[in-house]
Amino acid sequence: MPAALVVELSEQQRLELQRVARYGTHWRERQRAETLLLLGRGLSTVEVAQRQELNKRTVMTTRRGWLDHGMASLVDLPRSGAPRRLDDAQVQRLLQWARSEPLSAVQLLARHIEAGGEPVHLDTLKHALKAAGFVWKRTRHSLAKKETPTPSSRAVWIWPG
Image (cartoon, rainbow, N blue to C red):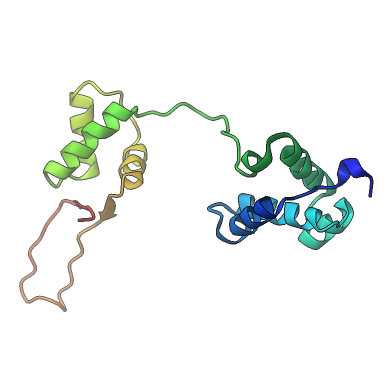
């Protein structure tokens, strides 16, 4: 294999790549670390691609990223997309309301709009609260459990704690 294509790893780099390959937070990080470990063992691009069932170009891109950026090449770069509908201040305000009293998502959305917030989809509001650790549960009633069920028409936010 030409010297330009060889990935030479120090013992410290090898250990770090092994740690990422085993315990990395994202599957892409783990896959890239495994690719680099295989290249570091002297396998060719084609052999690594076949072993990992990847395209040859993917292996080449991973190697080029390693040579250019080192460990920073393992994580994905930010992707483009639509801007957030709720900014940090609005999310914090929603969290404060949700913690202070049990409100349904519809009630939280109404309060958000009353406070001058931009109208957003109900799912957008739920996703923001779920990302902050809130769990959305609907109240359910069963006649088999209680003789006299207590009817409740509103959903409740339950948070960890």
